[in-house]
Image 1 (cartoon, helix red, strand yellow):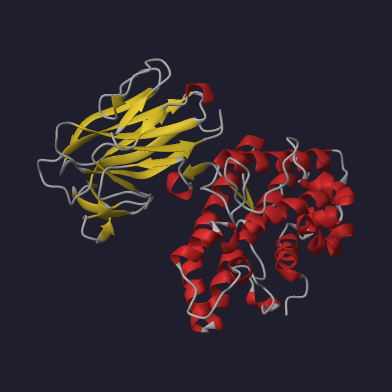
Image 2 (cartoon, rainbow, N blue to C red):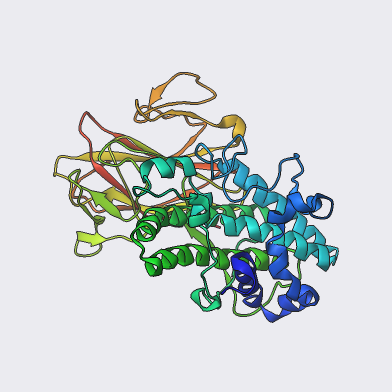
Length: 433
């Protein structure tokens, strides 16, 4: 049986994984951390005491995991809002850091516990997809009726040793906005992993295979512990109480395949973001291969993203943090010799410069022109910062390095040279400081 409940246990493990210097600053309240990680669930029982930690500046309650733009949680949400997630992460990060800088350690650990609950709920399958939709897609066995939220997060039969016992915290940025960027992207990754656990977990439960069922839920929950430890550690670092702690990694560049894009639009056979593979349209996926090296033969490329025909991928990024974008671009070796495509890199300066995208027509409308233009024909220099020109199949891939102007979203576009379509690959794509 889990002694502290799942929230409490995962919070305890995250705390114990912090560097000694940081644990010492919270040690007086270490025994309270499991209860503090459960605090948001007790809000309606004790609003006066808990409200200051879970009511956000705009008046909304801290959501339990993801929420849509109407602030409905995963149980009944319609999609999800990345902006809401960034707002929540930014609020807690700033509040915790402010309190740490003021050496108000007790308050900082309490806000840290509320923030922990948000991260942990984002790894729970019951919090990451509309539960009514799940019930429709996976009907109950005949003669059965289950409350899916309870099934998909129930930890009553778990033991402490079912969970990870230690994680390695990572410094997620040199400033608050980079930390928000890193934490929110990792949050999206654990949301995706939690969604992937829903079907196998429920199938195992319906079949009475409780061992497999429990394994899926534990795997999903464990993902949040590493993120939580790194988030707490980053707060200590940015509050200037740890600048030189040895043995903790620092990030100087970010692979785009470690991020969850704001948008991914490609022509069939691709419809969803799936890094590392090229699809043949018949259900088969193979590793991406680009021509390169001294042999000029097809070689597997790391951290790759494939698209087909006219495409657009959008990634949010913190303003002023990353100075350049680098990649190895070309056409996958599976293309016929007559295929060709071009690659463009664009940057949106801010929300007031956000483009509109029509995925069905592969068209884009920016703020300066105001008319719909195809991905291939969109060349507005106010946005476009690099263009490879046309690249042919069978040609050695190009290594590119593009200086980035200050902006908050990166757009990667592939365009067609004619009516034909090609598998285009952004290989080893990275944001660099």
